[in-house]
Amino acid sequence: MPALIAVLVSRFTRSQAARLALVGFGCLFAGSILFSVTEHLGFWTALYWAVVTASTVGYGDVTPKTTAGHAVAIGVILTTVPLFASAFAMFAGAVAGAHLRRDRKSTRLNSSHITI
Image (cartoon, rainbow, N blue to C red):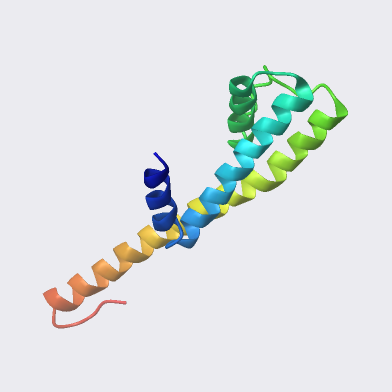
């Protein structure tokens, strides 16, 4: 298992979007642990809360009840939402860029002129 994790991390470090996602997952898990401790909940319930919060769905079935829990919620929201949004935007930009490069290449090969 550690070898698999090492391979995944080495591949993630090649891409900036993957690095952002990896840091986002780290914040998600750290927030889950802190929420579990501050709200006296099980880890899986806290992880569920963190995923629902980070995805901006917010069902409302698990909510912070203590001041420390509110602070953890603020931290999870202010870190995971922008990290995952940035990672997704970079990934989508890379996919769109690859399609544009492919289309430009096929346009140059298939016609005697280039349409702009």
